[in-house]
Length: 265
Image 1: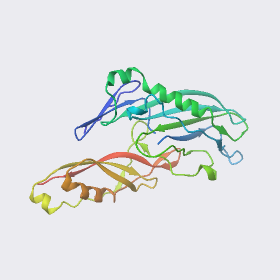
Image 2: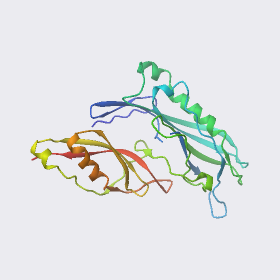
Image 3: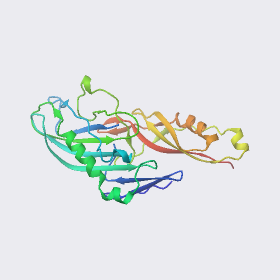
Image 4: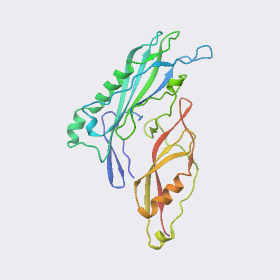
């Protein structure tokens, strides 16, 4: 498997089992979600400032039929009253899949689709309201847009206290950019089915796995299939365990691809 990355307004191509996925990447990734990390002085005497009003981002209407996923990251400045007063350092990522609806890829990228997601994210972020504090603070807000399953939701992470209305699972972040692959600490080898060995069926199974905050495998699905070997690969991978992935000191769920190789001597 070959993975190439190009930053700014470049295009990366990820080949998985003969299926090409093009990815325009400027930053890390992130059902519409938002995650937040807070910078600035936080002491015992100065508790984290909770979000008291939040807005879901709206998927850009002129892009939704394209069936692409996207993410954006913004730095927001919040004043002492809790209002967002400035937004800067916007970064975006758009992911195009093999089943995305893009008849003319050149025209699609020429239209700069990432900017539409940044504008949608800025519009949502400006509606957010935080608890009042002693002064200004700067936070990083990440929005993710997905066209495949699930509705809109928001999860908070980092330095913010989470109220009852804010509790909920964090959306998994895809490995790449600033998110490094975790280290496998428990490895379970797959069982090679005797019938597959007799038929000399070999090859590499590619799977997409969701790693829970504690490092366990929460979900796994096959991206590149060898029918007689898929289930043994899934059974093995679901028993793997990884080091937790931390963002601002907090464990978070992630998504990444893994491979399981079946070979005969």
